[in-house]
Length: 239
Image 1: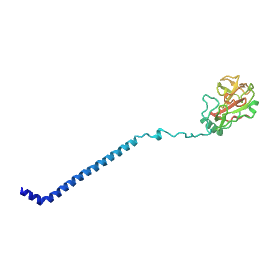
Image 2: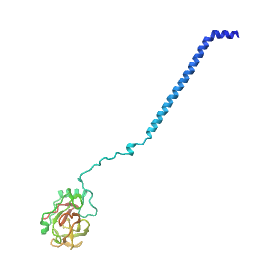
Image 3: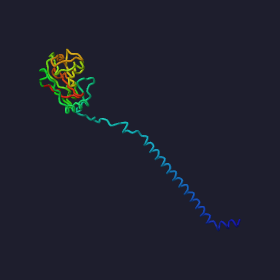
């Protein structure tokens, strides 16, 4: 027992220092663990906040801007021409018409009546778009309009063979004649037609009478005359 007391008297200071070191170490470990736990908690909180940010709806996409004025454009381009029209064509037909008109001479058939000697109300426009008041759109004018009184007799500008006789919703009575050179002449706005398909005629024969043209009702009574060479429209040339 005396030996133990003597040991503690001699070594007591060392034991106290060792106990203090142990206690300090334990306290440091606990403090470090607390700091690590706090950092982990902060990191998890930030991760949750980032996840919730990505889950928010994209208001820019789901709620587009309103009250934005839409752009407007002037009627500088021709809308599509109505289907099933035998007299009006646009787009590629107009372009090919302009090329053919420049490359080939205008048709000049022999023989014509007084009707074809007058100045046209409206000229052939080539590939230029003109405004049609009746149809309220822009389109090419593929023929020339010759004024005449309703009921006047209409004779052809040249002899040829009647290719087709048709009643068109836009162009009224239409007679198509192919001349000796292969040119196609189309007379639109006829009524009381006197010829039949397959019939050969002369410049003195009567095609019919002046009627009406629904597609050009804004113009005074007239006959709309078209000429095609190699399936391309060109300016009808009347001697």
